[in-house]
Image: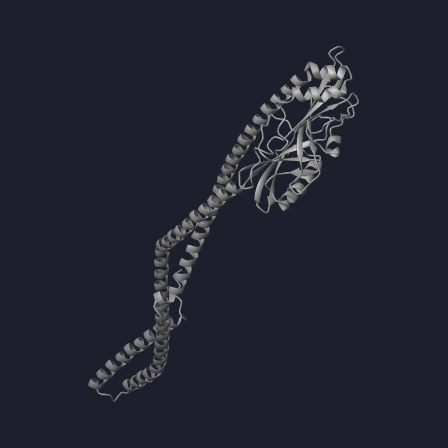
Amino acid sequence: MNSPEQVNRPDRTRFRFRLMAYLMVIVSSFTAGALYFAQRKLTSEVTRDQERVFEAEEAALNSVRRTRRAALSERCRNLVHKPRIRAALEDDALDLLYPSAKDELKGMMSDDTVRPGQPTSDLRARFYRFLDSNGSVITPAEATDAGSLSADEEAQLNLANLPQEQQLGYVAGAPSGTGTRLFEIIATPIASSETGEVIAALVIGFDPFGMADIAASPKESLSSGLWFEDRLSLPNFDDSDRDIISKRLSHTLSSTDLEANNFTVETKTGSYRLFHKRLNPDSMYAPAHEISLFSLSDFLDRQRKLRWQILGIGSTLLIAGYSVSRHLATRLSVPVEQLAEDSEKKRVSLEKAETALEQSQVELERSARFSADTSHQLKTPVAVLRAGLEELLARDDLPEEARSDISDFIRQTHRLGAIVEDLLLLSRMDGGRFHLDLA
């Protein structure tokens, strides 16, 4: 027979393994939950930090833009109040209009040898044109004095009627190998000094804000561009990236929901958060949208590092949890294993006792049968012996001394018969066939 330890060893190992597995499930669940909420919290904090950076950079950009636009608007208002310009328009001396304006705008015009995209002063103009009372361009005699424009670009300056307030717009040239030439224009109404009615307008073109001096490469955090007439002008981005951004932007701006002014776009050079904003609301010119692209590379790198750190911490916690679970399983299983071992010992002892009891029962039954058989076998000879002695005692010729001995023998047979009766009674009791009525 195997010892209790040998019998229980597989059960003990299985119990310890199951206990350790349960503890590991509990530890893993708590660890996974803690890591999940920790990652969500850290990601949320990083996102909020990134949003604050975006908002700060956007606020700084808007502040510079407002300051620049206010300065340009004020300079344009001052120009339309110049007496020489007003006199040429009121006297219908259009041949003197551009020569007079040339002298007045000399300090505001930039050098035409500067190519689009090169850094220039934000407050210097690239061209100027006048609109007649019908809103059509008054073509200068010498285009180079007022800045060179193609016929298509000049046609974009026309308005259906003269504006009563300053109008902001944009002019896009034909696409070329070096990109699309783009100008920001401010149309300022010119009122008659006599009647106060608007008789003409002065349109001055500038390099778009952010396109030359603030536009960054895709590696920088902020890139600025312009969406105008379903075309995207975005310096320092290749054609494939511009196509991806253009398709996404066209779909977004064509939707009715314009409340969400930002979205994330994936390009070949990386991920960007794109913000778009209408630059000339309520303008008589075609709508234009400013495009600001914030690179998410730093944000994603930081998020990736945090994720790896969290995974590292989680792995460490799981390993520690495994060690603790194994230790606790060993400690907690000792009393249970001891109880199981004691129970097994008691079970073996009970089995031995039951076996011994069965053997004793068999022996008792055998003894009872032997006693019964012996009693039955002795009862008849004793009775015959007593009868013979009593018959012998009844004879008259028996000497007195012999009669006394025979009487003693008869008494002994009675004693022997009583013993046989007792043996028979005991055998019946052992066999269960005799019940004592105590009532």
